[in-house]
Structure formats: C-alpha cells, structure tokens
Image (cartoon, rainbow, N blue to C red; front, side, top):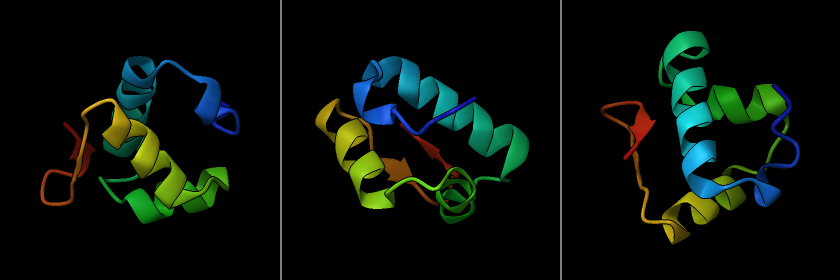
Length: 63
C-alpha cells in the first residue's frame, strides 16, 4: 500500500488503513509507520484530526 498520496484519500478510509497497518505491521508505533512510508507525521495527524480522529498513543491507533 502506497500512502504517499494520503492527502487525497478519504479520511475514514485513511484512518482504517492506518489503524490496520499500525496493528498488523508496526505494533501501534506511529513514528515507525511514518518513517517506513516516508510521510509527514503532523500532516497525517492534522488530516485525520480534521475528520474527528485523534491518535491515542496508549491504544496505538486513531479513534
């Protein structure tokens, strides 16, 4: 999955994909995910926050 164009993705679909990747591949580590996909962490957080999703570090996912 290429997340380079995450800014153009539907935010609900993006949240679902990110949470799946966090769960399956990155043990909830958002820093590791953004490094792996070479995407801007704050831009990702901002896009999902604009849709009402916040990253919960203790859960390792966006909700």
